[in-house]
Image (cartoon, rainbow, N blue to C red):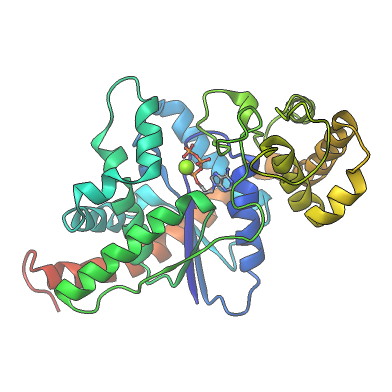
Length: 332
Ligand code: ATP
Ligand code: MG
């Protein structure tokens, strides 16, 4: 089974990215059914909204160090930077020409992010899912480990792959989403009906993996809950408490029902303190590892290897696609 996934260097990696995506990658790299696993830094996706040049460069490197600090092993997973592999935007363009504006306008991410733009909405924000489809289809990935919010984009990837295969003959593997059972949608601590996002302008909404430990504790302490005072798992009526239970369950390994039982007579302050301790226990070793590797040459070695591997396979695929579409001169 071949897997691929990526994260945008569009801000500080959050607990949502970790629990919904990276933690799952780390588990999957040891799955004997996984024969190939590619993880990339989606920097071309990040520029669909305005980015500061210096911050972007810093976030790209920081994301690679975060992948490694969380436990991704370059002997099992190829790690590369999307913009260093030209076939991604090349296939992205072809898929844009096979996607329909109406399909793209229906995407929830586009609708949400569009509202936040103050200097115009880039065309790239609309066509983002066709580049994402290219990221996946270039490598014949069977499955894509992602959080819940990316399910809709995966469905569009499937549609684009099937449409292309029908029009030009069998070319792409039609991939499946692979969404974790727990932690697939961590909610904002400030607005628990919205998903936690690294591009949230309000830093109180997210916990960044690299936040100072005291800041993490403070953010959990001030997480929005409700006035009911009871610890119960009810995502509709008590989204804040349900989110904290999910976070604690993912970090501690205890089931949500065991936690509900344990804290049924507890008050919110005590509960939050334990949630904070569970989160800190998970994040502290990651931070230590991150600080060891962020400035090392090792990062570049990993990225060079990943880039060469990705270029080799994606070039073969894009050539095949160009031939099928009838572009350029026929190559063998
Ligand atoms: P942005 O706000 O810039 O879109 P993001 O936090 O949504 O950032 P992405 O780079 O878009 O992060 O997504 C990276 C991965 O993290 C994807 O697999 C996505 O599904 C997952 N993910 C993002 N937010 C959450 C969340 N709140 N809970 C669980 N998984 C998440
Ligand atoms: Mg996102």
